Structures are given as structure tokens and as C-alpha cells.
Length: 429
Image (tube, rainbow, N blue to C red):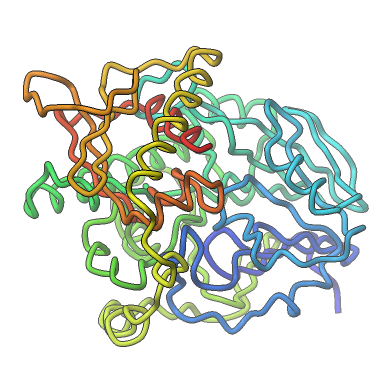
């Protein structure tokens, strides 16, 4: 039987397998086991695919360091397995993999094309500092991969959202694009973790953010004109005690995204939906299986009856000693402020952390005493002190804890500054 020039087997979130015309397979972003982002992120439905099922892939593309793309807990491949990576900027991911002993790193520069067996692979650094907010530094992590094989092209953008101008350039320089895999979700703590918002306001913000993202995708495909669109990445639910925040996340199912786009797009792009194990043939323009829509009632039942029982790693640990914790927060704050100074990261907000009723200012300068002042721009943060201890000791990470829904915020005024989010990534000893 004739092999497809290029196909994609979907697994979950941003994970899947590209197979070329000669049988070469490239695995993308393998997150298969529940509990990333400090224990809270889970799949729906529970995956049948295991790491052993995908270990035979000829190479692995890792888009960036976030654990729903690079799950270090279960990243267990042969040390000489070819790993496809963006070679750009600080290279946090490359440094991590080298420490873990991986020796066959295919490092591709921004805009560079390399040949891997029958594939031509082109990689891209972050397309924008931020697509919807002003940022001086912004995105340092994401990448995108363009795969070409047998005359067909697939753009795996995952979390690296294109701008409208970049979409135009893609059509002119790399087009025609057959299969565009574009992120439609706004994974992260907003609005679910923001206590300055009422429940009604959280739902309103949830809807606003999704509409913003859907409209952005419409603009992208109107300019790029791919033959097919796969709503991709950022598909998750929260398990454990944080499952009550699911209805406020800036996310939706890919079914909901597809329905909206089909109703509102003017372009000729066909929206594709896949479930675990479904294979899309780019030449035929069809899947090997009939698509089964997501059952939201079953999804909610599974979360409440099964996933809600999960315990996070920090919940099994002892509470830290408060005096030592405050001392270490001060040290971490000073180091973070110095790192931000070197990177020219600034913010108009004061950042406050609540430690057992003690309000400590940790940015833009440290103070052991802070009194709430409604006239100031503040971001007040609270979290389980066991998790804070882990963050300070670098066993956990502020950014991952935030994305996982573990940190609650009070922000006044309610204005997002991407560079402040970046600054807090350096909060540790």
C-alpha cells in the first residue's frame, strides 16, 4: 500500500507523531502522564498511550521547557535519540538536556532549515514578545516547527502564536501551508486564580479571552490560507483540590473552538479535529477514523469523581519553619531584583507575598513590612507555604506553579504586565 507523503497521529495536547513518505517518524512534545505543573494538569480522557508506545520514534521535537511539552519526570529516551530543538537565546532547554546526558541534539537556528532523512525542518523563535499585551522582554521560551515532506507542509506552532504580519510572511515565503496546528487556548492562572474578580467577572473574562483567541486564529488563517487547521495545544483540566477552578480557566475544548471558527471564518480553510490515536493524512485531507465529539458531561463527571482525588507532591511534605522561610524569601527577592536589573525587566506594580499573615514586598525592592495601600499598583500573591519552600529551593518553579493554578493573586488595577510574570520566574535561591 502506498505510504502517505506526510501524516500526523494525534495523541494529546501538543503531542503527536509526524510520519514521512519513507517512514521516518518525529514525535512532538510528549506529555503523557497526569500531574505536570506541580501536580494539577491532567488529560481528558485518561490516555491509553504510554511512553513505550512512542519510544520507537526516529526523533523527538521538543518545542520548549514547559512540562506539558517537556515532561522531565517521564522523559526517558535513549541518550543518543535525535532531539530537535531551537538554538536561540538563553537555551534553557538545551542546557537541561545536556545535563540529563542527551548527546544527539539537532540544534536549529531561528529561520534555519535542516534535512532529517526525508524531512526538511525549519524552526522559528518566538514570533512576538506577546500577541495581546505590551512587553519589553516577553516570550523567551517558545519555538515553532515547519515540517516539509513529499510536497506537503505542516506548521506545528504549539504555544508560539503567530502575529498577523508573520502569517502574511509565512504565506509568501513558505506557502502553501497544508496543515496549520495553532494554539487556541490561554493556559495559565488568569482569570481563575485572581481574587480581585467576582465569579461573574471570572466567567466574563473567560469568555472574552476565548473570543479574542478565536478571532486571532481567524485573522491568521485568513492571511496564511492553510488548507487545514488543527486547533492545538493547551488542552487540559485541573485535578486535585484545584479542580473547582476549571470553569474559570481561559480554555475551552477544541470542539468549541472549531464550532466558532466554522461559523465565523470566510477563508476556505477546513477545520480538523482529532482524538487520541487518530491519524490525519495531509495528501488525502482526511482522518483514518470518524471523529467522536468530546462529551462535556462525561468530562465533568470524570474530573469530579476521579481527578479531584489527586494529591500534589507538596501536600505530602511538612510545613516549613516561618522564620527561615521569611529570611529565604528576602534572599530570593534580592537575587530576583538583581536578575531583572541585568535583563532590564521593569514593572509598575509592587509585588507582595503573604506568608502566614506577614505581607512581604518582594519587588521592585524588598521590604519585610508592607501595609495595603489601595492607591498603589499591587500584585498580592498567596500560596501553600510548602510549595513556596519548594520554589525557593528550586525543586518547583514559580511559573509552573502559577500556570498550574496553585498561586492566588489579588491585582489592582486589573492590568496584565507580561514582563512582571517573567520577573517572577527568577524568584528562587
